[in-house]
Image 1 (cartoon, rainbow, N blue to C red):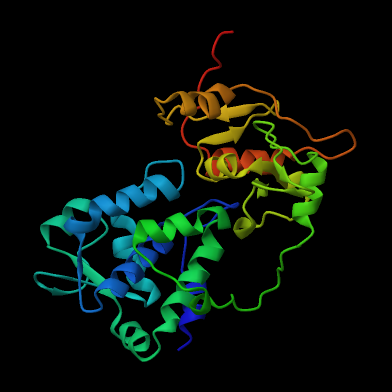
Image 2: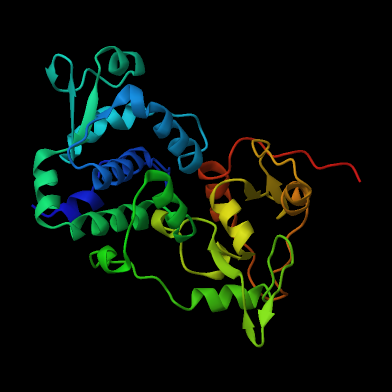
Length: 297
């Protein structure tokens, strides 16, 4: 049984690029808990709060239930659920899972495989991360689920039909003249730019192309906030700030809240702006809630 292939082929609801990372998030969480306690079970009532936080921080913008992946991941052969009455899930309802004392853990065959080959855990986690989340979120997502990955463990994704274009970073940064499209930051050490990144608007994992029309030059802070749905891009190429974002410090007001309604910096004349289709995908699948109104000047 090829566990990497099975991990890459989790059954997820999909339509027109819609994000449904519920199962990958639970699977990552289960791998992290297995790493800490291979014999432990995960009682639904005890981890429901953790799953809600993961779905809020890394899931789709709309509200969703942590009970859904807890029940449905069983069908992928990597997870099992039992209740106080015996094996099997009582259903996908929150009340059902709580009342039945439902508990889950990795499937027996997978636990055995991880026992024989501990490095498999890191490779499976890498597949889940690469296929479902942008690289800017990988480190903090591992921290959120309690995973400790070593570079030597993570390996590479199985070869597939799509390969990343290594030229994208240079093309995007050049188009935006090496400055953050949101705040104008343009730091360098000598001739080398520092803290600037090429952000995919439509994520590569969801068929986003490696080209200028799907890219923004962003500083590290605004790249992270863009990928977590705090920031977005409006139809008129002005910056959106989510009303869900809360920041009371002067730094939060200056670096985030004050961006609402501000026009993008760039791209330079002759370079293609972000395509409407990619902008719309980000607004529907990543941006959280409604945009904050523009403050009166």
